[in-house]
Length: 239
Image (cartoon, rainbow, N blue to C red; front, side, top):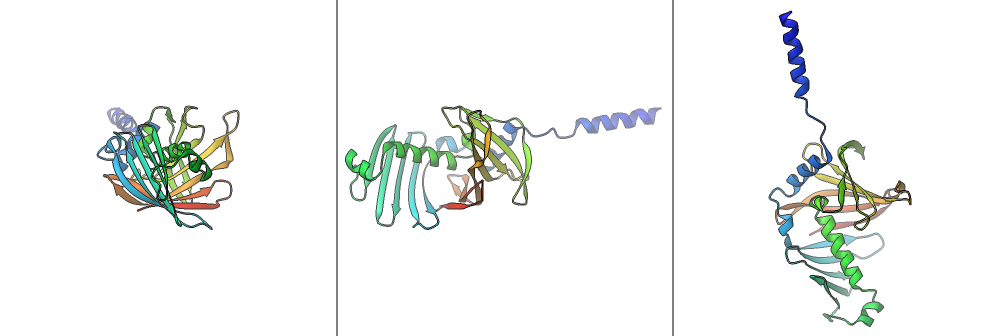
């Protein structure tokens, strides 16, 4: 009987050694370790350029400065001959247009410029270029279950994130390379009044190549498409 019990013990040992399914928080830690191995994001203070290409429109080149420790954000955007400037310094907003460094309220309104738009740009660029680290922010809820999905013929580990209502109402999915944990796609959907996902809404964003800023691996190219019909919307290119 001894060989039987030895074999049974070995099978039990091997079964217990099987790798447990990866959880959402563990996957998030692994992808952050890939993109920001030295933990530089919280002290981020850098300037970079983003070229936005959209169909049937001229490019917009934006110079963006994000200083997280000092709570300062600035963006200077040029499209054709128009230059707009936004600065948020600890919540204090200034807006510039062409040669005018700080325009009055009437000029801002005429040109559809506002401090609300300045805050929108701050949140937009800080969130998207701060991913996946921003998924650690308060008000973010990471689903415990990690799914394996195939998208465009490639298999990914997929993380689901939802948010407190005062943070955001969209449902987000983040697609990671199962070998390196690099973030390669993200996708969001709207919700109906009952909190159910509306599959014909939202967009998906394909991330290609990498651009290192302050030791952080950021996506060089972000190409945007509608979920409902795969219509191409535009590409942000980090320069």
